[in-house]
Length: 511
Image (cartoon, rainbow, N blue to C red; front, side):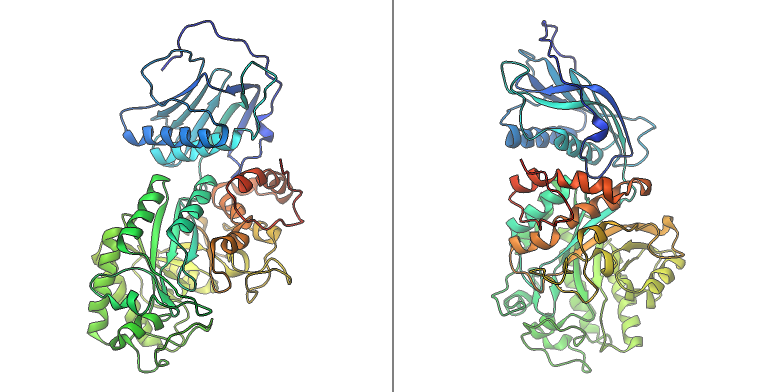
């Protein structure tokens, strides 16, 4: 799509340096050309029209530009009147775009060209454009507000195909709007997955129509004695759709055979005789509950539960938990994991479980999530399984920043912002080949938090660093460089009304 051939206004842009733009995650390759693109009212957005998903990406960018600048840019408008500059989002078959989320960005004086093979790649690319738009317009270059974007080329693609955070909505329930706000921030920093921990001892949070007491009984409590809550199936579908519009996959988790008190309280036949008698739990204890691994009725129940959730979840994964089943006999635990794996596969999903599941004979297609036992991760990898890297000592967002942090715990240690950034998932587990790593996840357990503001305090700014650890090449991971780019995120976080922890390790650049 070419701009109309009217005489264009020549703007004398100040010299710019794309290489020093505070982009997070840091792109693979940035080549500055010293000039600039002027985003203003004479700009329009065009997209490839053979794939409607590309036009949706253009509309998403236009909406974000309007909310940030007030500019109302047309998308694929028939008229070219008064058009001097354009942003073109192009579906490309370039051989240089090797992974589905790869993109290329060419920024010139009168155009921005974004190439991607997939809409997901285009969506990652527009996050880079969003980050390049300055907070303030330059009102001295022309007779109207103009936002100066540095020119050059960006070649980019993610290190891992799985870049995730987990949100524990079981210990404390979070509203649909709070989850959506979290998804928006994940999208901005190029995450592509949100793992929802939907059940635990203290609460069951997803409506199962064939077993209504799960939410009637199990959904009515939480840590600290609050009223709990749950997502109706329509609300869950709304979250899934909202995430999908941002090219984020939802991974639902039903934790089992331990962490099952709320389910067994709702339906006592699920209860394992060697576990504590189910009752309403509002404490933070773990390891005392279990499903009965030898009852056929338990697996019939799970077939219903997994089936209903899988039917609402278009993504490829289903998480079965599997952690801290301390009262389940090892033989029962292994039997349980192997039978549930079959149920997950029956519903056309790929099983994920915490690293304890490696005790069982896993299908190589199943995935182990490392949180505390590298030996189990290695065992799973030797079996052919992929590994998600989520070490509690480095990646748990619910660990306190320091000894005086207002929220969080410290059983795995304190995680200041620099400690959360200064490690490499690729080399964290000695002996684990990088091709065995599916990706990285930063879990946020909610025992000590009860609303979105407290959630944000623990997640931000550490979550931003995990976005970079999952995307950027290992050679780009440099704390001194990163903390300068992190400092420049303050205006975005404040515009989004995100209650981030203002660590003194970073010299925040507030507008």
